[in-house]
Image (cartoon, rainbow, N blue to C red; front, side, top):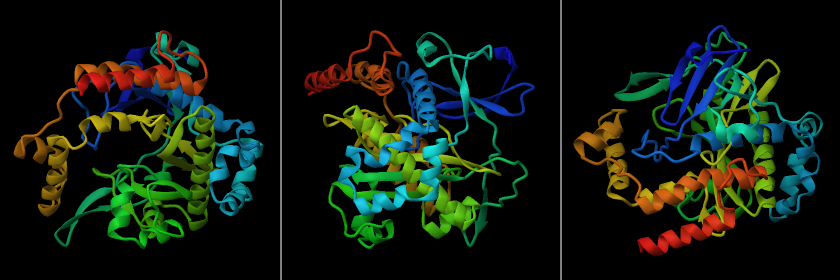
Amino acid sequence: MSVDLQDLILEYDGSVKRVWRPEGDDGSYWFEFTNDYSVFDWGKMPDTIANKGKALVALGAFFFQHLADNKTWINLSDSVHLSIFNQEWLKKRVNQPLFQRLTTHGARHHFQGLVGSDGKAVAIEQIATTQAYMSVVKAEVQRPEPTALLDQTVFYYSHDITDARRLVPLEVVFRFGMPAGSSLKSRLAADPCYAQTLGLSAVPEEGWFERPVLEFYTKLEPKDRLLSIQEALTISGLTPKRFEELSELAFATALAIYHHFAERGIELWDGKFEFLEDHKGLLLADSIGPDELRLVYSGHSLSKEMIRQFYRDSSWQLAIAKAQKMAASQNRLDWQSICSKDLKEQPSPLSPQFKAVADKLYGVLANHTIGYDVFPQHPTLPQFVDSINVAAERQA
């Protein structure tokens, strides 16, 4: 289908992503990833990161294609990289009917292909020199209604779905371990019994778990909220059988991505997935890339966590925690406004030294992950890590 850029209708304008609908096409959305970034749920930050949007498009397309290939799944159970996990648990996952379907058909997803501004197909190899969008199947997004009950703001999920395909309103977080700085550490300290809820045999130390675990968060509320399994099932609108399938698909996809990164010397610690549901079952949705994953190479964070670390323990980040507590006590949702207007704290731009390194992050990671130079004139991953060390020495 030939499309003129002026015929795109903006459906959603987020802090890092825009969703467009081609006029006259009721079956597709186009995802545009920008060079903007967001940390700590703040929204758009004062800087941009070079090639970030293009790299996210390239990586999203790559992973959806990779996971749709049944060959990705056939030998996964024999991966040497998965030997660090409980083999009885792993065998149980592999013997699930869903995993067997993956070895035959691959994973279903919402990705339709890469397109340029004219609607014509674009190859991953062309992304560095052209504006590319991820074309995805259209799905209904039904946002929960904030409602005042007993002096609290709660969210009502009606599940009054009229479309055949819908977004499951959950973020499914997978964790292979607990690195330093993980939010899970404080939750386990406050409630050691939570380890049993996650399926772990004991409260873990920092490091790799005996097996991956899942947590469920809200997707469409102003702030992501951790859910119990009971809450997640109710909010999801899924049947118990379909919810179990969603969990198994999340485990399987996490293991496949873990293997892919491990083959390239990168540690995958945790990340998140989103899903659609239609009359055939579940589809992987949104995107898969460094903004959804915590990646480490030679002790250095390669994902958005690298940028989070720049702001961690700053006066602005400390003010965020205070603003969120103030908002909760006042039954307000606009904690960002409290932070900027009442506490007079906003994020500062990245330092020139740090930004120079960050501007190479996404291109380097895309090249290394995909296996060829989508972005020319970028350093190799080992060279990039060396530049991080040099920048840290200069800033010290």
